[in-house]
Length: 423
Length: 191
Image (cartoon, rainbow over all chains, first blue to last red; front, side):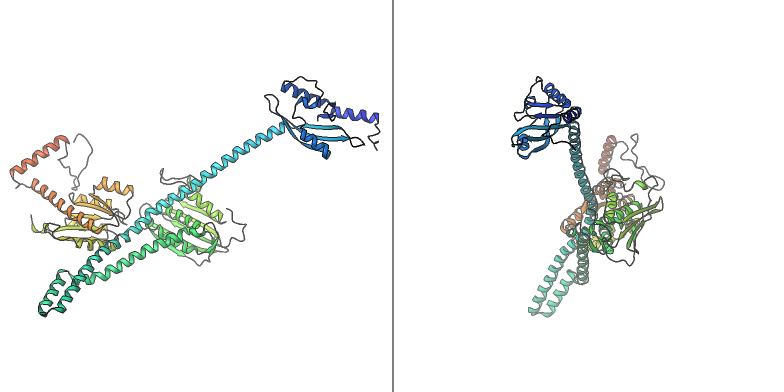
């Protein structure tokens, strides 16, 4: 349709010139020595902008005298060897934001292959560039803020864990120190008893050697009376039995603590018995509950479920401790389990003071607490909510002020139906 | 003094019977020499309420109570015991010593010791023996001081001491009782 370029058509050239002059994108034609052969109107405007901005005099005919970075030598070399180069150049001019140009440099060669000129078409992307840098800076700021928040959140989670640990430690210390107390004391008594028994044995030995049987018998009878051996005979088996029971209690508490934390399988979904988790949790917070509440367990027939036991135990503990705290004097805490289709349902009830209507919608909010400053982090239930969500379950609460509160937790038996666990 | 009062009487309260058994064994090794030749009678209660009933009937030289108990705390128990026997020596023996427990024990019941479980048998025996002897001396001094038959010089000494106390802390030597016999404690300065 158009004649070939090596047969310049005057009329077509004229039309091209009009189009080129009118283009919003600066266009240059420069010879291999970088003298400007042609510049359209936008190109003139750019050169003025550059020279004024950098304080030089306009009118130079060599393009790299306008600004040394306008056509970088490496870009020209690339264009000369590959035929074309495109890329961005940023020209710092004066105090203003840099002039950023999107350049396309085409090397034009004559028939014999000699470099004839470069065609340079540019697009001013300063505005987009500035906006992009700004966005980048904002993004970096947000990134930093996010990382800070993330760190703060982890710290809070940790402090909540420590807070509940502190409460645990108090209860567990009491629960362990009682049996340790009497076992420790019984051992001291046992030492005395064994001294007395050994004294008696010595006397028996002496009696065996003695010639005066009657005298020996009297001695031993006296000694038995003095050492109150009759009492010792009755008390010794009892002392040992009580001490064994005490040590067994300590062993059980340590085992429950291990079951409760299960630190060996952190963050892994495993098949686990919910009843076992409930029992070990009840055992370790028993000390906080026993002086206030009677615990009524109604465990139904439920299968093992895929879960992270230590995390569910943490949820159970938070709810049970709250239940205990809701009871002012004496009350009842109920724990029941049941099967509902492919879910298990765990219900925690108490007949404590209940949760007022205006408080109820906020109990799962982070940092929301009705406890006095320092007594609660306000994270217990927020974390519980997150952990149950992680298990693809739900946690609901109904409460009547003055009558009590009921927490219902629904957990799927298998996690496989869901996507990979959210971490 | 009557003969019945010469035996030292100790009352132990803990909701754990095995702790009581261990304490009873521990104290059974206190020999008469440690108590200046007097005997020791130990009574144990796993219920604070039953212990209070017993305290209504009889006087004791020393009460050792657990802190955390189902019916009432050791501090509540001791407060009620003091109403009946203001001069009884008292200690708390607790498995867990949190700040509130210690503060309440000291501020509300002025215990002479706050002991922790596990306890050391030898130390406990010594402590109980010395406390018993001290409390008996104080009691006897108080009895003598208020007894009408006390010697004149003793009475003068007590009276001058009372005068000194009264001048320093006006009202301290007078006791106000409510109709039910309870002691009225007032912080009012004009008393």
